[in-house]
Length: 265
Ligand SMILES: Nc1ncnc2c1ncn2[C@@H]1O[C@H](COP(=O)(O)OP(=O)(O)O)[C@@H](O)[C@H]1O
Ligand SMILES: [Mg+2]
Image 1: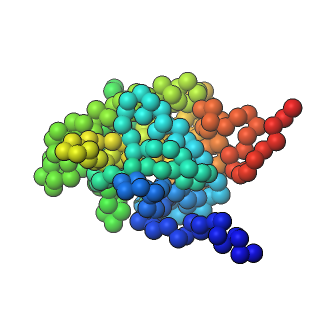
Image 2: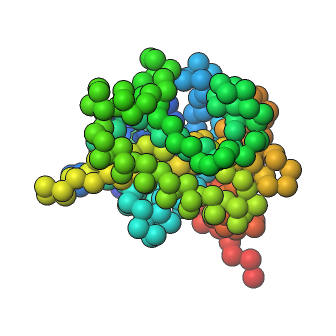
């Protein structure tokens, strides 16, 4: 059985850079690259609620790949290079800006609660919010004043982040609407990349049903992580439905079944 040892490099021999709630980052094959591995772990309320949901990581890897590749193709810079396998993608290492950038089109979640709006109310215009990425503090909402005073990003960078957020929102809104899905809101992260003396900000992390609120246009059924937050069940089925409608999975393809498939004659 010795050949087994030489033919396969066990995954766990790679250097692990960071393990988060939903993903693991490994050292990439070249300097400046990382491998982003999608786990099946689902967390909410900053990890106070935690469960392992079979197949979630595979679906998020595919959906996030699809979104980031399309963003790259329309000239919105992202960290995404290419998908490597069922659970992993090759990305460019960035210096993460410690902000969660939330774009909202329709009232839901904490905004609905905070301002006493009924969930599902269309907002007068898209609203961008910033949260300080810090689990110990439960990701508190911050303003541009806090961001510049504490040096998390400068005013020019905040402008760049907002311009990126608007482009991503417009792209995602259209993409999902074409699939019969209403984009209620989403979260994105950004990071700095240096090319010589030039620094630019790119979209990083993931964009998936874990980080978006997605409602079926007709029924308003939830197709996102709120199914987990609110104990509704059917999370993997909902993510699979999103993937299917985006055309990522063929009618009969099962994202969770690995290996080669027989092509029907
Ligand atoms: N291109 C990148 N370079 C460096 N770090 C990244 C990149 N993309 C995402 N990250 C970071 O990697 C982590 C992804 O794992 P995740 O499970 O989401 O962690 P967390 O529990 O911190 O949210 C996040 O902290 C995210 O900010
Ligand atoms: Mg995260």
